[in-house]
Each structure stands twice: as C-alpha cells, then as structure tokens.
Image (cartoon, rainbow, N blue to C red; front, side, top):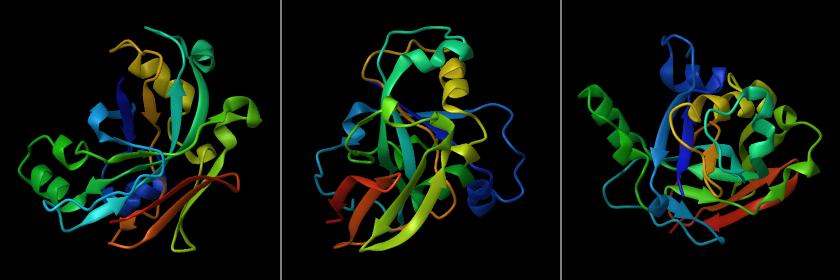
Length: 205
C-alpha cells in the first residue's frame, strides 16, 4: 500500500507557505510509507524530534483498481471512496532540510503522520470537484477547503501519477491542503468533516 501525497495544490496555501514561488505546472508529488498511517481514531503522539508540528487537512481518495498510464477521462473509475485526512508535517525539520537543499521526506513520512478518517463512498457526492471539508480543533474551525479550488483535479493527479508508478487497490491519495495550516499541541481534540459529516476524530497526546 502506497500513500501518495500532493503538495502546493491550492493557490492560497501556496501564498501562505511558498510566497514568491511560481505556480506548479504539474502536480508536486511525494510519498509516505505505510508506517505513517494512523487510523481508527487513535491518538497522535507528538514526536520528540520536532518542536513545530503542523496539521494539514486534506481530502483523501482511496484507489480501488489496479491501473497504469490511466487516461484522465477514465480516472474516475479507479477510486471508490473519500475521507478527510491529516498530513502532519514537522515544519522545523522541513525548513531545515530545504534550506540545506536536501530531501525533506523525514519531515512528512514519520510514523503516524498520515491520519485517516472514515471512508465515504464517492456516490454520496454529486461532483468530486465540489466537495467541502473542514477541520475543528477543540470545537473551533481552523481550516476550510473545497476541491473546487484545487490547481490539479483528482482525475488529473491520478492520470499524472500513473504515468510513473502503478496504482494498486488500497493505495491512498492525499490531494493537498488549503490555506490555514497551523501548529498542534498536547491535549487538543481534532475533528474533520466532509460536507458537515464528521469523519475524523482524534486527540493529540
């Protein structure tokens, strides 16, 4: 099982963290190992190697078929469910690695860094590119997004990624985070919503 993630897929978020950088001309892809997966409402334990842990709320897509070199017009046949996930990022490590010109996978791929909620069948939604989601921390909404604001659609991302690697049943696609990322601290209660339905619920320990 692969965890495929997309960076810089929302304009406002790019301004938030990457001001001055050119708009991506193709999806920015990175991977997380399967050991990063955190599910079933289990708590996220803050690691001792970072002092600036950020949440990044994302729509996550579940791949349901084997596919390679998938045409964009057929990409919708290769996923069957979506949910809300958190791409936890050790921002201080990421900044340090980038400044040194080194790969920054360790700031994204550590254990527990890919939180996943309850799956909702795609048939529940009228259009993949018009799904709203948000994150509450201790009852206050801290981040909102809509797939209509993506630079690259879900189908475009699937077509692009499948040029390079075979997609397999059970692979997960984190589609990027909108504006509003921020830090977490011990004791906080995180809840993620799809169109008002709570699908994610866990604590920071």
